[in-house]
Amino acid sequence: MPTHPRITLRNALHRGARLFATLLCATAIVASAQPAGTWKTDKLGDTGRTLTYEATVPLLGKPTKINVVFQCDPISKGDVHGTVGFDLYLHKVAALKPFSFDDFEGPDAVAGDKGRKPMALIVKRKGKPPLRMDIVPNGFTPHMSNYAFGIAAMSKEPKSEAKTLLRALEADDAESLQIIITDTRKPSLKLDLTVPVAGRQADFKALLTGLK
Image (cartoon, rainbow, N blue to C red; front, side):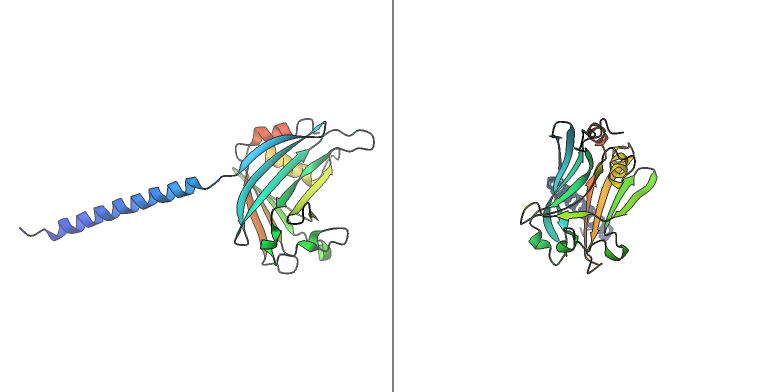
């Protein structure tokens, strides 16, 4: 007896659906196998703390190891002032050229010339508009193959960009911190990465213990 054409079509559709579901599951397994970022806490001197996020992220199409180190020392003694802020460390930056890292470094840095604020810090918040700050970061070379961007302020200052940022990350509605650094010579060239902070509020609150 010949096979009914509708049955043949229906079977083919069922097989297609099963194949699609199998592919989706395989994709999910591969995605879950991707290494996630890690967090760790540490002491900073006698009275400070750090909270560090480490991951490998795509920057300019290249997998790049990063460390984002949030730090807070709320205590000032005499001429020694506690600070608050963060540093973003990029490893093996030779692979990220032609990004103009030199324009951000040292007292002669030109990154902030002509009113430019080449670093954007965007805190995504649940149920609220994002908090965005455009700033001029400090650039430095901690190692010949690495580069770092950061901001810092004295913790005793009542207001600062660094304190505003960390207070926003401490809030219960904080979901992520997006960091975008725009090249000074070619604005279409950007270092763009996101630090997931949802569920890390207890860590940020511990980091900021004693900060006024």
